[in-house]
Amino acid sequence: MKKIAVFPGSFDPFTKGHHDIVMRSLEIFDEVIIGIGYNSAKKNRYFDIELMVEKIKGIYIGNDRVRVVVYNELTSSLAKSEGARFLVRGLRNTTDFEYENTISQMNRNLYPGLETVFLITSPEFAAVSSTIIREVHRYGGDVTPYLPYSL
Image 1: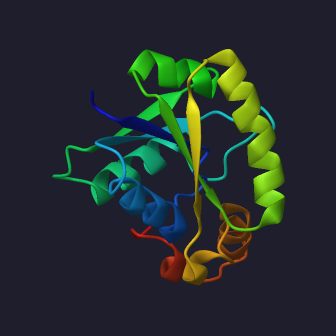
Image 2: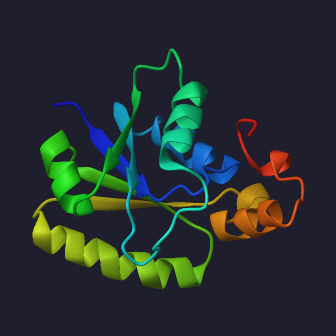
Image 3: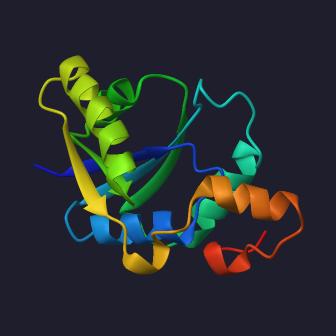
């Protein structure tokens, strides 16, 4: 049976840290679906979702083991509809773990058998967050060292 994982997030923007998680996930799973979700807690995106889809797809051109989808439903519902039995999440610190652990428990209740796999962020990306990248970009700072594509 094919091992399919969903890597969900708002990816606003998709960073080198996210890319690192995808590449490491490909060592474990047969297919990784990058699910760009609409986060109800984040009212407005900073980067246009279509732009992010284009940029992320561009990174993985020629790699048929990575797909990008946009979704507006529960992550567990997306995983089920895609035939995925795994979610992948990157953890930078213990705060991330506390947050992600609660979500993983709910996802498993909603879709029994859905496993969340946590990958510890590579040290060189531990300080990189989409929130910080947005702020740097908003005020004219150079974000190119943190993104696997050019804006």
